Image (cartoon, rainbow, N blue to C red):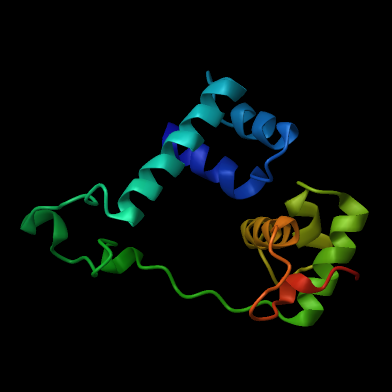
Length: 150
């Protein structure tokens, strides 16, 4: 349960600011900002180790993998691929961001981008802010996240 609260907080508030970490910690009872940040950094290190090949990913027994796809996700729970954001949705997202501020994904979803859930808005915001803060400005392909004015 704590892991689900942690992951939900990351999806909603991960923006790299102190306020974002405070909001995530507030959603995980009994955990401080430092503990939440430490857990996040630990997860990043684990993923990097798996992706680099230094550590094998989890192995499951045949019983555990029965009814799962190649990524280990239960077939009944398999995620649908997301629908790409349209330019109009992104512009409405930017307007909502200006009006409601960073982190108020629910208001942006309810009042600006009504075709998207708060979680989808938060995910879009995370990708948008990462794209904006990227050091490399010589991008190989353009993205909807390059649009910066509503």
